[in-house]
Image (cartoon, rainbow, N blue to C red; front, side, top):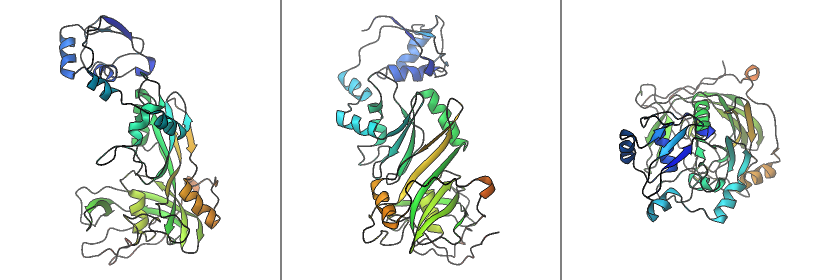
Length: 361
């Protein structure tokens, strides 16, 4: 058992719920046990009794009564071991860091979070960005496993709340680069095509453009696109999602007949490039402009991953292009991808038959 201790609330923990503060610092203490300590007055904040949902204030003092020491199993679960190799790896992905925000250049092929048969992922490596005992960084948005590029991490709970609000409120500008099989017509536009989750013939879950009379689980999805350059039958597109749906960019590109090269889920079959072009998905989160928790705008960009850089070099594309895109006064004309009727069928490229695609207005 530990002795009675007095702990000061750190400034960056201001506004955190007391039960979540305990979960962070004493993960072996169950919520039920904490509730009992609060009811009996053994846990107090600045000498006063409080409830589990009490919002703590930076600089306040929390009275901690004697607590049982965590078991070896609890310690291992609360503080997973990060090898020196993994620590060096995750630190090598950092392209921006300050007291509140960490930005990584996520490599293609590495999942952001764990799941079935996924043991190594960004979320599990985040403790490698801080020293033992420091606050654990937090994810605030996601990228697909095979998508590379800008991934924002909150360095503390206060920043996480602010950044999550910025993403939910669309107070962000995300630009992706993609290499597509096919050239979009017209070269720039706005794809306004609602998406719905579906199960394909191979049993894998994906999304598709929703039919006109479908209403349940339909999600509005809008993407701006602009052709940056072309090479024979392939195009370098800049994509800016105005909504954040699962697989939105991949599904939207396929829907207008230009699937992303190397996308085996939404592309043509075989969904791969040929010759010297690497057979990997060519989608990269190139840049992000977001409101920083401190109030100013943060802009960060990530260099292309090796497989995309190779393709850019093969085609003579400018990997360091810094053109300003999607400015309001230069916004491309709107293209609406209509929802097909249920009688319409989609071919393997994702084009919709039985409907008439509207051109520029």
